[in-house]
Image (cartoon, rainbow, N blue to C red):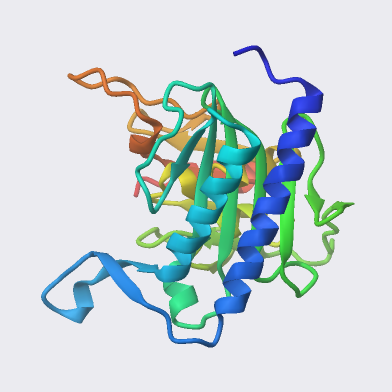
Length: 279
């Protein structure tokens, strides 16, 4: 496939925003009702249950898949809830997390997101993340395309930072050491929210310990549009991010579904401090 043109990117961004908005509306409509919930990691005792999946996760992903198939036939879709791959060898991949922060969602804790990331040959080129709350104290979609500017809903968004605030907030993943960091630590329970909030300046930086590709694919274009530093560690130490790549194993497997890595993003000073941690 040829390189994506600016016109292509504008169209993809517009459709990604529509899909994220649709997902947000479906999620919002489900609030307050009793949902069917299962767990990916079943256990003998409640303490060790992991990774809840609600009926809404599955319904939202199915609707997004149908829309992508209709609008961009042949392009691939990589979703959290289904392993169906309509275009495994296509250069364009839609990485979907229908609800990032499902544990928050099923418990009624109002911080979660729907994330749409579009990759071209492994490089994130468009991101649209619907967040249940935002800098404006309301839900909405943060979005950007490669080479473009960060937007919130229909408006270009420029973070406004208060210069008298000397200790900003840092998103820190589970198990990471907070001691000595140049800021106060928060944990939202959603990698997509933390990417969006870092791009918007609500967090100075975030460190995400165990994301899957769909957790961060929608957030990376937002971070790049905001000028944030992004580093990943896929087993060879912290490196600047230039795309999602999976080295083939013994069977030559290079499926992006199997990408694993730690992520640090935000202001360069705090990113440096977070990457220096040995944990």
